[in-house]
Image (cartoon, rainbow over all chains, first blue to last red; front, top):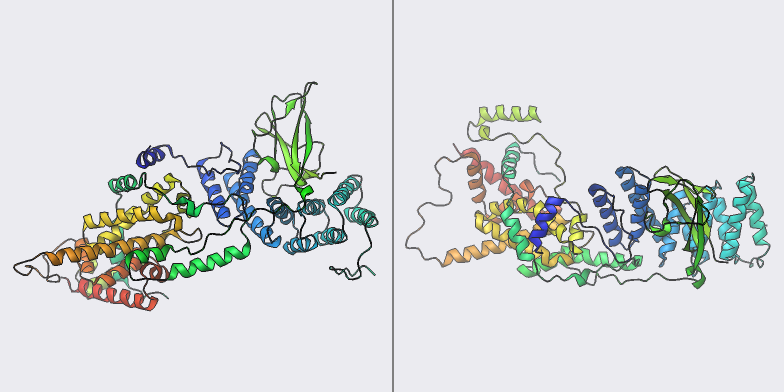
Length: 212
Length: 193
Length: 209
């Protein structure tokens, strides 16, 4: 088909070319032209700076599935784009896509950006997806971000494994459901994990004024 | 800095500006002219989902800026200067799989009891919230639905969509507030044992 | 804005009952909307979206034609320059930076094409051997023309550099920074060219009677 005929047809049908990509999610077919264009704009901007565009498309699809207005959807996608960028920067160098996504989720619930950097410093060579997820969930359940972050990064620095962090999150969740105050539950469960870990080295990377 | 305010010039400009009309013949001629022209797309291929390292992209941007502002006398060179992209191709950086176990997927079963549903879809961050990608299968007992999905370790949010229209959080899972759209999701943390 | 126009008209009628009063007042909008295209579209075109490229042509061709027409003074030359411009854009889109603005990039190519077209025409005309000088010199008083033609003639009487600067600044509404990128000329020189163009136009149009 010649370019001109394509042009004329597109004028008639008003169809917009979808941003097809080998790995990317596809925007829900029910998205109208305006929304499609707005999302493509964000996607193109993200792609230009190397951010995982499929996460943006997924956010748009979430909004579509929830019957949100196009304005809310585009606002949400734009906000996510910014969070992804911050997460990518804080989790440098070379964060994986899962880490970037998890970092953006943490920012979303109110975890301050510098904490992501601290976590990266604690685990430079291991994926932060799980610890970030644990931290996000603790904060989402009402724990103050800095306190929860302190606990998690301390455990990470002391050598806690993903499995132990996961168990911490599950236990705290269960305790809160049973009526415990979140901070009390966290304190208790963190002690539990700490008691299983090798003692702290003489000089710790993280200062904790509460420790003697 | 603004030019000196000048009514006459403004009016002259407005008059000149008004004279613009569409020229569909020209548009068609342009499109015919480029149709079938070979394109050098390989120079600007976007590497899929590969995060650029921050340092590399800043350097590249600086290089481009310098290239963009330079001016050369000759015609073709002038165009080239405008489009200069010296060494701006950021190297693709593949995501680093730190910790092999973290990259492993964990099979997770999602279940729902709903006797009136005729279709139940699982939507979540792990399938791009697609309403068609992951449908639950009916169990032997009527009204039971389930599907098992491999998930990466970490925190995931999800929900069900019943009969293509009803949003439903998982009644048996903790909730996650949704600041973007105001409808709660369900949340789940996954970790390989 | 309406008040300003009326006042200017009254002043004009009083001070120089010539061409000024016949010029229609400017459109009532003082805030000009952005003249650049949605940045996603050139990027889509760059990535191979042919519809997006067609949109680019649709969106910009009128302005490009207007600019080329005023700069070159000839409809056919203008169309050829604009066509060349878009073909070049197509060929070089892969070099368009994703964080750049499309409008100045496009106008740079257009300005170059127009300069080339002017060169070509000058060379063409210089080859024509004439037995006698043209009957009417460029700036001799013309018989009364309609307003637009009057203004166009005034524009055409400007030296090419001033005409280019004037068009970019006042008709295309581009910033001096963009103009510097488009023409490759220093900001101070551009301001001077625009000023001289305005002075010349003012003088010529106020003279007309």
